[in-house]
Image 1: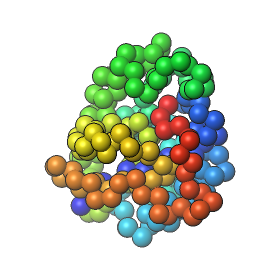
Image 2: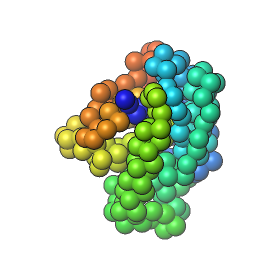
Image 3: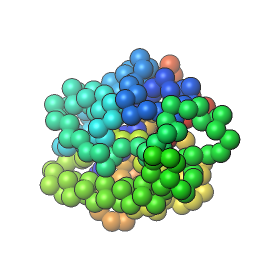
Image 4: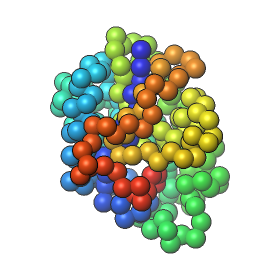
Amino acid sequence: MTIILVRHGATALNMARVLQPPDTPLNDAGLSQARAAAHALQALRPAGLVSSDLPRALQTAQAIADATGLRVHTTGLLRERDFGDLRGLPYDELGFDPLTMLGAPPGGESAAAFQARVERAFGVLRERRAELSGPLVVVTHGLLIRALLAGPVALPADVLHALHIGNTALTVLEAHPPHGVIELNSTRHLDAALKNDPRGLVGG
């Protein structure tokens, strides 16, 4: 009885460490990562597939749909935190860390509003999983996965601090409270050429 969280595949802006506009697509490596993740997930016989509606997540989910025959259901609740006017700007040139800021950037979403949305999303995911006879695959974004692990899953702070969520990494949760972590941030499905560069930006 599991929920499988999948971060989307790599994008050019991940590697350039730029806060991503909503329409950012996967790059070639990201598409290959998505197909590799889809192959790994096929063996787990998932019964449902939910995705963020942003293109980089939706392209990842479509690869999984193609491999499993599942229909992709989308929801804006699974979108990355909205950084508003900061999107499109180089992260390392901002002079502050928007990924940890509590307030809302201009035109964006505060940490509290984002966490509230994450809680709503997890409620929807639990309800959807209860309707299924097998695992639910959830394709989303790095900060949202981190917020789920920090909030409803209550992963220890020291584990979270060291966690660099890889592109197409799989995190498997027990579907019922206390939502124990069965597998964390696994990229075993990626060969050496597709392994994540730890310098890539997670979030934004």
